[in-house]
Picture 1 (cartoon, rainbow, N blue to C red):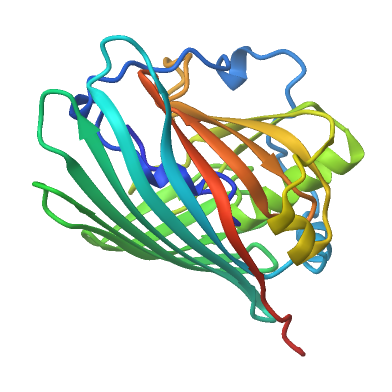
Picture 2 (tube, rainbow, N blue to C red):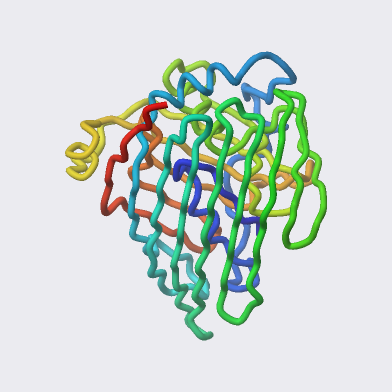
Length: 300
């Protein structure tokens, strides 16, 4: 199972993915493959995008957020009986780019095996023009060797690019036309939600969490809804509405019609996620916003 990160907290809980054999999970029954979905907005092969992304980024809210992770539900026969954890996330504007810092600490409780703990941390820098992305990903899991992904990726507009990995070993991975980096993906989703151009939006997203070509992320965007009287959000950011967004994460394999996993969330127009539910097939994990702190914008 792939570990995926989509920035500004949008689908970063996907970084908690463990190998399916660890819990006996089945592939979630979710959205069909992008290639088989009618009405999908496909990746563009060309055209300016950097100016749009930069303008949207100026409207976002730098922030630090804390989420509580719990088991939302599990199917009969699932080995997972509980989930306990936390995610801390920060997104900053640093003039020429955006930075993210994320740290997950989570424990999976099993019915017939020892508990398993995982700690994952991400540090990224993404150029506002979408040309460069630096990443460092560290994963520590009970009973398994530590993992580290480190490198830099470059894109030539909509024409694709290349990711240069330093760790776990030096290698280059080609990035297909239409690929975007995490923050740009979030901003483009918000733009789609605001204008209602397409209810389904598909893009390959590269985050550096795997030394593989970026797989497509299919997003289904619903109509804006009032937040459930979230005092944390209203007090900190004076926001009271969000879009329901469903993300399906597909491998870079045209033969696989179903996603590795999917995520449902409430996304505000400033890039902050108010809540999230991740479906791993046999069980679901909920992320609830517990604390939110606005961060100052730089005087560039």
